[in-house]
Length: 207
Image (cartoon, rainbow, N blue to C red; front, side, top):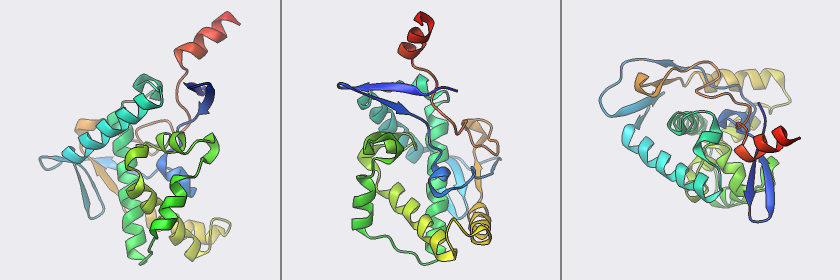
């Protein structure tokens, strides 16, 4: 799949979707669908993600896409599924950090908010992970907590430590309501890239 080019002012940025788990060097979390209690979008370990919270997050994310001049169609997957998957990863990260009594300071979150990532833009860096830049502190705190747990266990370069970390994280299994679609080991979405923009497709046809 190809990258999509997002025009913002006079700058063109190449964006690839970064599945939330990828930020700490993980494969997508495995999960399954099963009957759910009314009003629940998913249950992740001991935490419940309500349909109401999912709707709010989807609305915020759609607004962020609009501000960044990215159409929902360019995601190549329904926005609701992508946002739900990110929320599930955030929940798992948060629970893992709590299990290890890891704390993340406000200054650490502040610094993460300024991180341009591989896209050279803090805003696009967050959007590519399914996060609205206007409400990113909770996600970043959870993600940083998971990174700290991994480092405490020995870091990403230690294979045994990495395997232990992955085992602990994937033990916090998400169970999704089937109303939001099917779930595979790769998550709801291809963890690769956004689809082509119409502008890019036209340029390729002209070339």
